[in-house]
Picture (tube, rainbow, N blue to C red):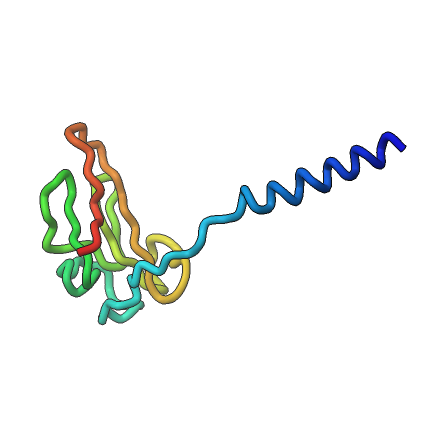
Length: 115
């Protein structure tokens, strides 16, 4: 009978933890709003066409261009990647955004901010 009490206690713990440890909800950041084709050639595009509605800055300096289906080997950068790029797999939909932190040793800033 001792194991019956432990079983009930375990069931109670599992039930309570389900409510406490629920997963984070999904928030769509609208990276699909770009008018770029997902399989375009690597290069750079204007920030306003690659990430409409977003501002990009690196080390506090606003960036007028971002990488498109391309990336860097270590410099701080922001890139929008479409399906078929050679850098990284797209997480969901047709586009993903990659934030790369370089070796900048000054003040740290978030490189991507919604307008």
